[in-house]
Each structure stands twice: as C-alpha cells, then as structure tokens.
Amino acid sequence: MIQFVLLFSRQGKVRLTKWYSPYTQKERSKVIRELSGVILSRGPKLCNFVEWRGLKVVYKRYASLYFCMCIDQEDNELEVLEIIHHYVEILDRYFGSVCELDLIFNFHKAYYVLDELLIAGELQESSKKTVARQIAAQDSLVEAAKEQASSISNIISQATK
Image: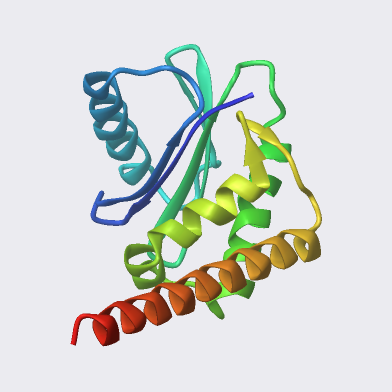
C-alpha cells in the first residue's frame, strides 16, 4: 500500500502531498523535510529507491519535479515506479506537456487526477483513457456549474435593479 505521495521541486518546494496513512501535521512537516533532504542530496546515477524508517520510498525526477511515493517494505518498487510514470503520463496528456507551473496554478486538477488513479493508497484505474474520460466529465460539470452560477447572478442583478 502507498503510505503517501509527495511532489516537490529541485529547490525542495512542496507542490503536492497526499497522505493515505494517519500522520499529524507535525509528523508530516518532518517527513517532508527529511525526505526532500535525502532525495535531493542523492546523485542522479543512484537508484530510485530509498529505505526509510522501515518503509521504502520510490521516486523519479521529471524535469524540475520529484515524484515520490512511500510504500510498505514488502511492496514491489518497480510497480510503484510504473504508477508514478503512469501518473506523469496522464498529467502530461491533460496539461499538454506538464510543468511545475501547471501544478502550482492547477493543483486541484492534479489532485483530481491522482484521486482518479489512486484510492486509499491502492491503484484504482490503470487505463489512461478511462481516467481522461473521467477528468473531461469533471471539467464539463465544473463549466456547467460556472455557467449556471453566472446566469443566476445575472438574474439576481436584474431583479435588484
């Protein structure tokens, strides 16, 4: 099971976190500080797996972002590496060549993609097409809600004149 997901930049700035195990806010801050320090200090030629506190951390760097997932000791690291790559491919398809700014300004969409992919720390959907369809459906619902809110505010402003 995936314990948590972290995305951070080369400067150590956190861009996304998702916790599937209970951690207090203080523990979360300590974990982020500790893991980002460990991963950022590793050389580029070293493997993408780190043993940490009786768990394993699997990470992969894409451009200026590190995608990290912490898993149980008995879980398969290569499978998690594939999940990370799968997530990046879906983000890439959705944003059209994803970059750090996409995650900063559209973090809610990155979370939504992650929630479509993983539920309770387990892979939920392996089909990129299915995830893309779900995201498109969510986007159309959001647009419809915005249009409805806009028309309601227009009606209210007309009525108050």
